[in-house]
Image (cartoon, rainbow, N blue to C red; front, side, top):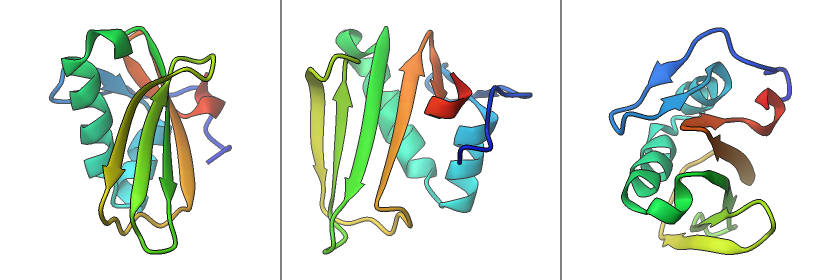
Length: 107
């Protein structure tokens, strides 16, 4: 995922927010459009998440997962337990800034 630096195209989500080439690649190749939906719809509903958020998904051995959003200073703003996922990576971090969901390498 580090091969993504910047973006050539912006994608508009149903929430009205944008996401980048790297996030689109993650969603397509990892079959993770559900994760993009979860992050952006949650952000849309919760005002405290709308400025900046570090979103971290950690997948456990039993295929359950934890989705956490922090404010950039390691203060937790949101946490959700996901009972089951087939997400292929053990963990992923995405950033939400200025209305756009990005990979950290795209900053």
